[in-house]
Image (cartoon, rainbow, N blue to C red; front, top):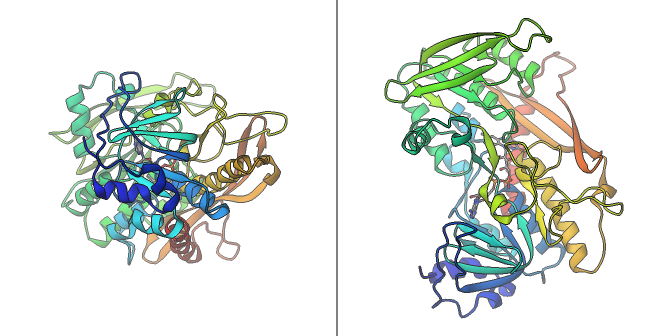
Length: 468
Ligand SMILES: Cc1cc2nc3c(=O)[nH]c(=O)nc-3n(C[C@H](O)[C@H](O)[C@H](O)COP(=O)(O)OP(=O)(O)OC[C@H]3O[C@@H](n4cnc5c(N)ncnc54)[C@H](O)[C@@H]3O)c2cc1C
């Protein structure tokens, strides 16, 4: 595969990175299928700081590093040509005024131009930490410091071991999870907007997953859309556990705004789906009390009009490719470094030259875009100090109030939202967090129109932060 002039221009970004990739136009990187099988491709560049993933975390690290010192040679490898935001995608599904798929989509060239880092659009296929080289489908890229910011992936195989690859591929096509950036949001939007009759079913996975309030906000927003369009169906949430992020606030809205049109069913495990008949079979366990560990199981089969199957989440395969140590749970969070000098850090426990940010980190903080921005800024400070021969401890900034502020729309007419506010603190060897969901003192309700305005402002501010 040859690297095109267009790719090179993108990668070159501004001067520093340009020097590193000059003369590469004729080289042909060898596509490497996996880490272990990855044959060494041709070197197409080397960078002081190389970031895998141009999402919320990766873009922040790159921008902050260039803001701290424009001489730093920083580049991002990102597989998508354009950025699509997961945050605010539920507002699009709900028909919130002025929000559409275009609102979610951003042009990476804008960020490269404004902040001066390099960006190569290609897929990372392997990582050789001993050689300090990242294999991509366009060739190899060297680094001094590597930042892992690849986000999550889905664990269909782990959750549905009996499903064939063809059935999983069908699930991805006809019941898109829409929890990662890209075309899944377009597919889910199409399915919802083309719905003529029937219910919308959303599953909520057990274990750590991206943005815990997201499926519940999605339920509120799709219910808002169904009401506005005069469609008869309701939204059914099949939750694998009984946990609901911002639970009291969502329940208040489902009761008072959606009039029973959002139905939450807890402890529901999907046993099978017939995607042709549009039928879901699941087992619900009802527990008598907290001591009851067995419960009573009942099997149900329900029909759907649209199915948003959100499977178990885990760290993107990039983490396994890198070979850094991870937690033993199915998500496989990256184990972070800890020492007396730096009790908490975005450096990995395994390799002092490899850092991690975003949803993959092994800190006890919410997997959110706002956490990724906060972490990206702190990670950049750690790396910048190191490159300047100094030391920086993230603990020096903790406890940090409102490190993560996350809004969720619950009503479109009038626009109303709820929020959670997290403080981050040192919690043993990791960064911990404590959240609170405030009520409006005057109305005594969780949802307010002021928070809906704050949601719009937050998204605009975040996009300005990432793209300039
Ligand atoms: C519906 C929804 C609503 C949400 N709402 C909010 C909200 O209101 N507020 C909030 O703070 N957060 C929200 N989030 C969460 C937020 O989107 C994530 O927490 C955030 O995107 C995590 O950032 P990240 O950098 O870890 O991953 P990402 O933003 O996903 O970035 C990872 C990047 O890595 C790239 N990549 C992956 N593999 C490769 C590879 N092999 N080669 C090259 N590139 C690769 C991907 O293409 C991607 O661009 C929401 C999420 C969803 C799904």
